[in-house]
Image (cartoon, rainbow, N blue to C red):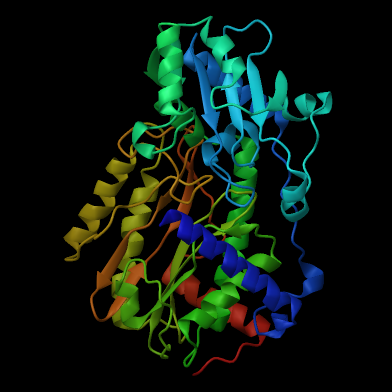
Length: 440
């Protein structure tokens, strides 16, 4: 399911790019091509990547470890990419803290000249690759159990597994690994939680990409606000959003854009996007751009007319208050579970229900790794997204990204208005600036 969703995201972004190329940029709310330009996401620092691997090796102690890339250039294996910056499928990283020289070895797939004509050219093995990736050796992966792993296991009594057993991924074929460990009388040690915990705390290079993804997503929301009007079909607005992402430098979609109007807003992950909007609708717009493989996730609820009705405003105010209470409580030591209870209790006191969890971690995946019950740490990025859903009538959800800091939090998506009067004013200003035609 996850892989199908990612493929759909790539198709949607490609379609948006094709719209741009054929001159579809003339619609209201589209920025001028001269004022924007897709940027190439900077490469991850090889020095920083090596430091990540060194921290991981310190954590696994004397154990050797291996991790294999199960991704591709378009969909990197997140754990492997976080450690190496390499998106090539089938590559392997060996970590051997007890080795004297070759402690970090990167094994790439053998070259295939015919495949490279289709998929792109790859660098030959040479010393410059070891400098590029800041490892001790770069070689080709030709055997299920690399010789370097066999050598490393002679000098240790344990092999650290860096993935959950339930994930279904194998770094080394289970039978061959078992025979190797038996031959050297070594045991396996579960260390996937160590790698997961390291990934939850974002460094400056990661935050740079995430801030960019959020800024692009804010532009997508502006495009949504300009195109919400009576007679518009939800998928038309979603297409404009995706087009805006491409124009503003997104390198992908974090997930397929959700535009849920009227009664569709009461369906948490509305996917059909096929309803025709009415002037008295409110619309949930749940969208996220990806930049340099890092995701974003922001949700707003907009009135098509530009003004909330009294009933809509009443529900909106409850959701906003629940969100603001939860955000105000963010600090190191508090868990996502704690924040959920704060928002849930406020919504229940209003006579409604919070029908889903409050949020999630964000990073290389829109629903990134992390323990919801564990204390938050400075450097973690989470979403806070309470909602109320009235079946057959409407839904209201407000979602923001929050960075946990040493003393509290930073609202990363502060540029996107949340309070109803501010939302109305922002929509009116954006529409006036763009000359959008909106029904009275």
